[in-house]
Length: 137
Image (cartoon, rainbow, N blue to C red):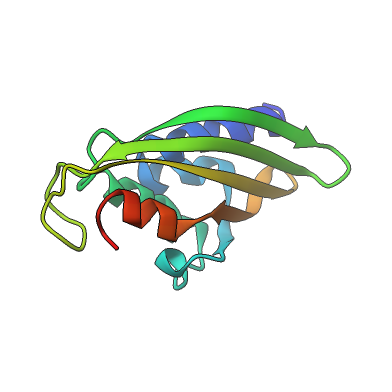
């Protein structure tokens, strides 16, 4: 499996809410995570992020992504995926009862490899826009 294929498989599993149990196959055991968004400020491991995405499908059961671009940078051993997250808050959970509000939120994953595994991922995301769209802020 190429690095690009690994990154694509990870992206698909993470974004469809399969959690760390499925995603760990493509990641270093201690893979780290960062995101300059308050909603994920305390999330420091890729395992915690994958499980956060899994949990998001409880209040937003129709959550899905639309991939807008995917690239592999050989020199930096990094994959970049950009996408739109689409979803509606119809399920229980989240900070408020179901709002019925929908959101389309742009984001990017920057996945850095060490060897054949993802060692670190940065998510670039405007959480305030997303939370407002769902009626959570």
